[in-house]
Image (cartoon, rainbow, N blue to C red):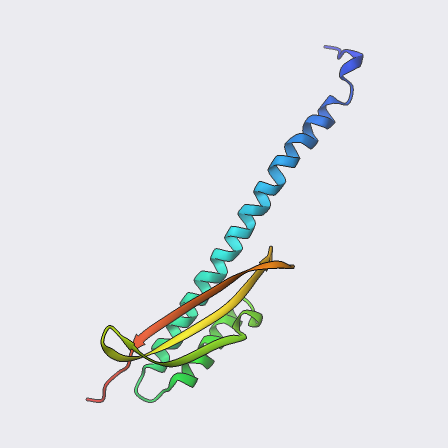
Length: 128
């Protein structure tokens, strides 16, 4: 079937119009996935650090160091720059809280970022 001469190039225009809609949607999905990955990793590392700091022979500084190591090994050390640990009360019991603050840049390459703050808590072990 032959095309009419006035329809030449219409496929290119259709392709561009579809791309204008699909590319931002795809990039948005990638950004959400990146933020969720970083948030879940930070939360897991903070919880692990709090549990480590709550053992009998460890302290908050050990928990912060453990959290930094976990983050550095899982994603990147740049997300482990602002880690703090301090004694806290966890449901009425003495415990440790580890807080991680990080900024996830747009698509991981730069630009405006999304600030995240996660906290892991654990009840301190008591001597027998």
